[in-house]
Image 1: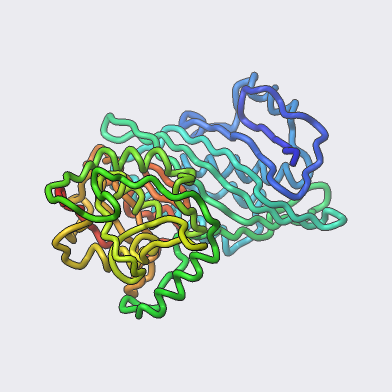
Image 2: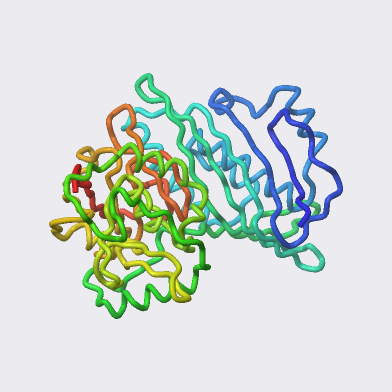
Length: 400
């Protein structure tokens, strides 16, 4: 499918002109702003302006381009006021402003200064009315933020998806509605004491969302033939974190990839760090992944579902993967796990793994479904976060 590209705020060559978007994947490429540009005018260097002029977006693309540019600027400023220039969705403006307010306060308390932000956007799906008076687009925003803290610098990355509705307003377009796609929030259990029957129903849903892949590589040094044959296996925290950094924004083809993939990804990271599988062959027990067999994928609930992994890690185990519950994030080490209960009602819905630490020694985490790398552990930058959010902190055993 041909792609139509729009570039803004870069010094790269202009995009091809005259490409008409068709249903399918379209890219809106690379808005880049720097911290030095946030306080004053919006002027860019002349060479950037020249490149932008040669590829000036038109129609509804111009509104999307403007939206991405303002979104990127908000990642530096933590203010949303200019969004009123293009968005008339009052509910989203309020929601977005509330999010920025809490992040501005959090970063002030952490002593964090975002010094640079780059946002690229890809249009994954486009729906246009015949007259082009209305357009709906599914957009993926890929954000890279350079964070300065106490003389140290690190890069934070994440991908957010949103659905935008645009309407013609004379010769221009306005964004009439914004719907963030909050994949982290999707519940997987009805209560913290869910029955295995409800877990089975959840597993069926996961199976329906997935497509068969090849059998995964099994770490035979740890678990030959799915059996834990010896004690004294050291958890390789460095390998778990390295795997997390390698696969945070794409699926390892050796494993099944779910629509809601966060816990499957975390389990892969733990296994890559020599976390031994507890293969029972029963979905409601153990922690295991066998691959595609007998016409279906075989895995335990605890491998693929956040609430089930939380139950598994909370329970005592004499062998195989095990962990200790600790009380706060600053007690975690590299390769440890955080599981999130957004509503504070005992339904854990999201999992992350510790892959780095900020200058204050607080965890930075990786995640999947909403791909994230070196994201601050408390997730207040997510629309899934609420004031009732509770966390479960797991320190993975150093030896199995």
